[in-house]
Length: 172
Image (cartoon, rainbow, N blue to C red; front, side, top):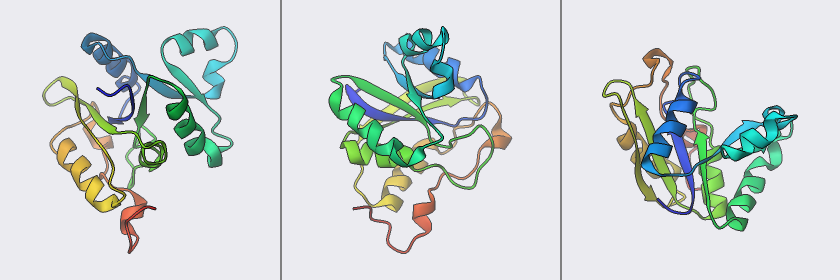
């Protein structure tokens, strides 16, 4: 596992995904950092959340989030940033593209992780560099997640980004 990377957390269908993935990573000897809304880091819980790898995100100002996280990845010698690609535990038509844009701007590899209810397993896939061809990169991601089901299978939507519907899927 690279020292600096973005890790997709999918499928993300319940609140249990988070503690299960942290436990799985710990068993595998992988120290993860994860995104959490800034309110989780206020008061006495702040130091605890940071100790467990939390990185506070101000969701009221999303415009600079990708650049700020890319900067964090470039400044820290070790940062394995776990990002729930779906952005919610509900079924959605599109994944959020933040994971893609963060990895691309920081020029770090993307790692695919999973918790699969059907096999009662979890794991980490290979690290790979994004090409900038969104559709081709998402084809790699779709192939990895094919057949993997979340804890709540009815909450898993299609694996695609809005950018794939655009005529030119290369990202500069």
